[in-house]
Each structure stands twice: as structure tokens, then as C-alpha cells.
Length: 453
Ligand code: TRP
Image (cartoon, rainbow, N blue to C red):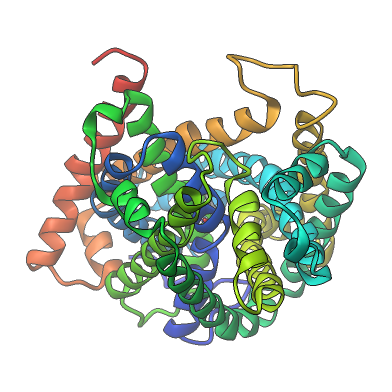
């Protein structure tokens, strides 16, 4: 076996720090903004069940594989894939998997930052108390008028991207570890409060029913693909983010346990967001399938009515901003690690370059809500296309290739050594799932979505 590698970018201080950082990456707008609105678009319970199945049967096993590859390679995903393919005597073209991840990361960050910008804007609205006096219609109008204003959207997008670049520039460890530690628990508590409030409204039963009662007739082939895409998006899988975080993982940490805790935390937060939002949707007579604005119109109404709404509202959007922040840095990190490794660029400059690329791509998303809203492809705007192509195509494809590389091509000896699970039942089950269940699942869902099966 090759010498144990060391990462030139440093290491997490502990297994716990890795769990925090990776959970920080996973929990973000994907859970609180994207999960509810996509669930609403695809009709509720059946989508949610399908999503949970994808997390369990595809997401968790692939996450283990991705962390494992990262720790073995100890470099940016591009260089990790090229070292590992060399070590295993495989085709060096596997490094393009790393490249695909870098591209996907730029594309995701470009629109992610725009949505995080909405969150920034809402911190100001919530803290000014304007939700307290606004009617439901006025709250909807607040969101629509933000979308109509490219200057404001661009300003917030720019601010958020700058925040992301700053943390990545400081280096993963000093920048990140500290922030995540208390922000994640705080977000969790605030979500609990929101669920509590939702329970007190008369939409709670209907919301619960909507979220958990599976009406399979509502789930289209597109819905299956969307559930798979949401699983990848929410768990930060398929583009190297978790791989690069794995490359900073200490050697003695167990990959199996850490992965399961991360996926569990991510899923619990998504379900809680659903429990907080759908009752409000029904209590206020809003439209579950209304799209990306869903949380930005439902939650402010609730903040306007609940006791201490101004405090909770401000707190909520601040914490959502932090959740988005700890996610966005993981989207940039694979590209930055590569620039540092291969181009010898200092980390701060590398972060600035990468951030600039994502920022530029994000301008299209800013404009897609106003000046460019009529430029569409298959009825999708630039923003919709970025989101769709990354979540529903690039990430599952990346995941599929990670599964194939790990379970079909890597030597068993290397996997066993790196994974540290031994070769007992748990290992056997994992290997079976990564070999057969996950890849077949992804392929079947792809083919189903394009109408072949
Ligand atoms: N998982 C994050 C969220 O739910 C977003 C994210 C961060 C991501 N890194 C990623 C998505 C890598 C896909 C791939 O908000």
C-alpha cells in the first residue's frame, strides 16, 4: 500500500469537528428553503417517502464512499481521483469526475448565493418589524418586489459571496469549526419553536397529513428524479464537497458512524422545516406548490402574528443565513483546494478567484427573476436550469460514478483498510448497496424520468 498521505490544507481537530463541519455543509437552504418548496411542487407525502428512501438507500452509502475516497486521497477531489486511479491501476480519466464536481460546485453556488441573498434581505425586513403590520398580501408583495429589483438582488448576492470567500480564505479549520459549533444547535432550537407555533395553528393536521400521507398518484416520474436530486443536494453529495471534507478527516475516525449522524441530522432538520411550514401554508390558505418563494411568504406571515415575532423572525433569518454560509463554503472548497495544490496560488487569492467565477455565473440567476424572466428553455428560467441541471443531473451522475469507482473498481483491500468497518455484516451490506442498489436506483430513476422505463 502507498504511504499514508497527509493533506497540505490541514486537518479537522477531531472527528467531532468533522461531523460539525459536514453537518454544516449538509444543513442549509436545501433543508429549509428547497425541501419544503420541492415537496410542495411534487405533491407531499409520496415525495417525502421517496426522498427518505433515497437518503437511506442511495445517499448514506454514497456519502460513506465519498468520505472514504477523500480521506484516502487527502487532496482536492480532482487530485484525489487522479492519485487513487493511479494507485489502483485505473484510467486516469477518473480525474474528470473531480472536474465535473468543481463545475457543479460553481453552478450550485451561483444560484445558492442569490437565494442566500434573499435571506440577508429578510433579516432586515424581520428586524425592522415590517412583518408585524403587513397584511398577507403585502408580505407576498415584499417578496415579489425584491425579485423585480435586480440591483438589490445583486447587492445581496455580492455580499453573501464575499462572506463565503472570506471564510474559505481563512482556511477550513479556523474559519469554520468555531462558527458551526453553536449556530447549528441554535438553528435547531429555533426550528423547534417554529414547529411549536405551527402546531398551535389550525392547519397543523392538514400539514401533517400533507407531509406524511403518501398519495402515489401524485408522484410523477419527474417527482422521483426530484426526490433523488433533493437527497443529493441536501446531503451535499456527488460533487466532491464531502470528499474534500473527508480529506481533512483524522485517520482514526470511523466513517460509518459519522456519516450516519450527519445524514440523520440533515433529515431531521428537513422534516422539521416541513412541519413548521406546511401547517402555515394551510392555515393561511396559501399554495403549497407556489415555488421557490414558499418560505419567504409563509414564515413572515407567522412572524407577523406570533408573540415576539420580530425577535424570532430576525433570529430565524440570521440562523438561516449561517446555515447557508456553512454550506456555501463547502461548494467552493474543492475548487480552491485544487488551485492551491496545482497552481500554487495562496488560499486567499484562490478563494477570491473561485468566488468571482461563481459570482459571475450568479448574475444570470439574479436577472432571471426580472429582466431575463422571459428567456426560457423548456419553460425554465436560467435560475431553474442551474438548479435542475445540478441537482437532478450532475449530482446523481457524480454519485453514480463515485459508487462505480468505489465498489466495482477499487481493490477490496484498500476499501476495507480505509473504511475501518472490518469485513463483517455491516461492510457486506454497505458494499452490496453501493455496488447494486445505489447505482441501479440512480439509473432506473434517470431512465424513468426520460420516459424509457
Ligand atoms: N447541502 C447544502 C444545503 O442543503 C447545499 C450544499 C452544500 C451542497 N454543499 C453542497 C449541495 C454540495 C450539493 C453539493 O443547503
